[in-house]
View: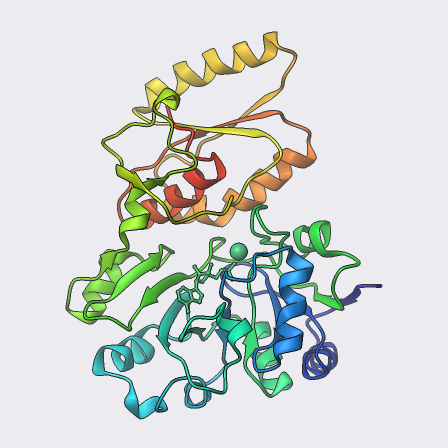
Length: 342
Ligand code: AMP
Ligand code: MG
């Protein structure tokens, strides 16, 4: 299949909307990362998203909407059945990088939610994303527009690197502002639970709600498959392992390691490991954002892909403090390293 390159002009976005309406797949920019969109209410179209990405079919998708009223047909009992906390989050933080997990209506096909009885919904703030959803005249299911397991795409070229020939079209927009995926907040239980940390931090959302939001336990643990005492994972960062987070994530071709501790320690360790790599004929690169979590989020996936293109074998990442936005950035860094920390 030839993948169309579309601009962000109105006529091109209209065409992209028509493709979505007729069951096709279009990659498009959002403020977080590029999404791979399909008609969220068309089971066949959504299935083809899983195929194009090579994504396991029990990994649910986020449904994107352009106005609050569109939520009515997606959630059980309609908008009025949602509690005050949900209404507060919607009025304060939408549009923006916050995904809400809510009870799902019968209109949402099972494939869209990976068989769950909940649906994840987000209203993006990116203008192109919003126009596309309006032109498509239906909610758009969109995971990140990368091959499953690779770093998420934050530029149109990164999308094409993975998806050229596999999808109908790409809207060639700007680089994404935020650079990491949305905060996913489960609002179906007694307390709000963060399932995926994002640029809207736990502390910030707690402030908006006026009540404590908690992290899902799985975010504080090392998954079984990668937990290996020999790797020297600093145990102060994590509690004991548990299953969950079973899929490899955000991995470049290069080997990645996260180095914890002071700036001084990073410099020393990076030099030692870099020299070791050189002796084995390997090229090592350094990623160091200091304590700038916004910049780290914006650049991290793009940097991983760029270093892959330049053929580096080994990437040494300076860790960040796991607080606020730093927690969310470190979540991506640790996953990309397969939890190889020292
Ligand atoms: P991606 O589309 O690649 O950004 O991934 C979307 C993520 O949103 C999934 O991997 C889940 O972690 C989360 N998600 C989507 N729908 C649900 C749901 N109904 N319940 C819990 N998590 C969800
Ligand atoms: Mg993804």
